[in-house]
Length: 282
Image 1 (cartoon, rainbow, N blue to C red):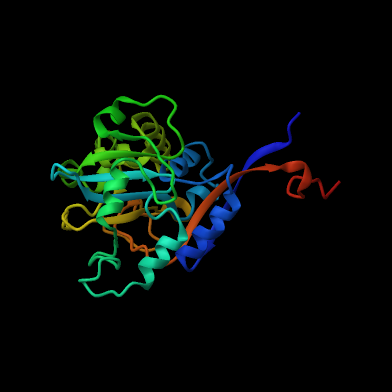
Image 2: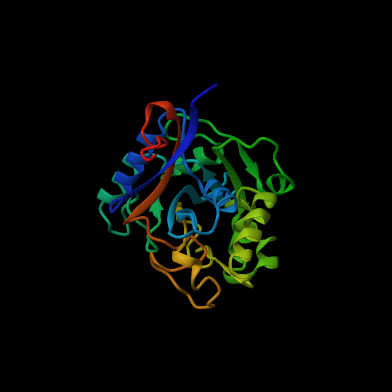
């Protein structure tokens, strides 16, 4: 009987590249750093007193605003590590000259600028580490994709993403919200998470925020999506714009990627060689 099990570890650092580096080292080749769909799936299958419900997390999901060859603005969402899938890419961003004319610094809203080549490649599922992943148009993705890999992309029309409701919304509205369908990994995973989130306190609203109403879509850029959480889920339907590391604002796309990070890394481990599950008391 195999003693190998998938085990997860929380990796927190005050400097995002260090957190990502440690998470990738834990995951190694046979594991992964949890994307937003993975984090939501874990919550949907965990009791409310588990830490997964009671603090915030940095997801290994990024949203890039790019322009197609036909001149259309789109949002390319990559789950599992994309353009900024390695800590070295974050380091380039952090160390770039931050004047507005610099092509490698932050945007005015603290997204990471990306190059035209990176934008072209991500549309085709070609990532900087040499990996090629499937990328699905939103319509096809919404209908359902069988056997999704842990790393993939979805292309969403920018105007559709921009028009999507943001803020604290009723759960029935959230079930049909395009940005959230993509962020959650599909219609069914979203429904499972929303059911569990609503049942926690029998609430009527949940926060879902995006920046697409306030950015220039001609500026090629990438953001990382954060999952909020605090002890007990207090404030999850306040209706006020509650932000910050301790706020329960739901799912956000505003957060600056220049700061702290808390990733979850998952990897196979031989439990027979560790002390974690040994009985130390009679």
